[in-house]
Image 1 (spheres, rainbow, N blue to C red):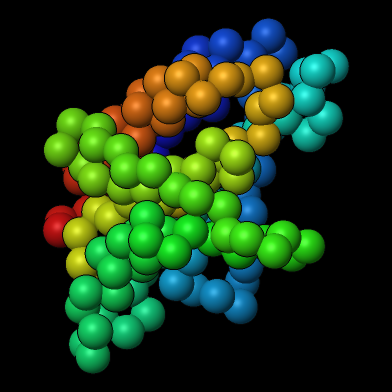
Image 2: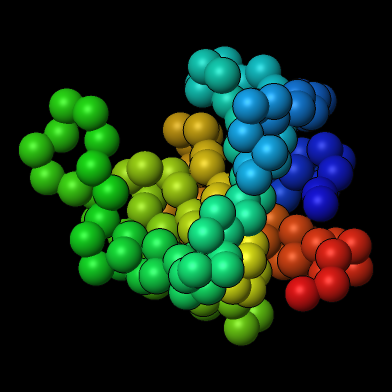
Amino acid sequence: MITAAEVQDIVNAKNTVAVKESNDPKNQQVKSCFFKWDDPETPNAGILIQIMTNPVYDEFPQYVSMYVESKLKEGEMAMGQEKPFKFKKFNIDGIDGAYSFEQGRFYWAGDANYMFMLAFNISTLDEGDMVDAAEDIIESIHKNFKNKVQY
């Protein structure tokens, strides 16, 4: 959905970005891809992109949109945290979603059957730079995804 060269350009990685498939063979509803590079300021620098299908589409087609909405209303718990991480709304080219700078995560719906997640592990990005990079990545993903999948 996006190339390593595009990611390298978008995040201004100084070293070559490598792609590592991160699929779980036991879970066919989630496809994952990890883009990583060496960065002395960020150990294990990279981004993770996941595309998930709605696991209960026939019974609950609103699952994907409600999942994203729940991030905005309730946040996301993490181990060792007493309070959930807060998420903010974003709109990129008509695509609504939720993101948490602290978590480095962006969630959005492609439609009722597809949900996307983008996670950053880049300690040198401030919130504005992370949102800018996410905008470019999300636009590229959606352009390519729409060309490959009818939804």
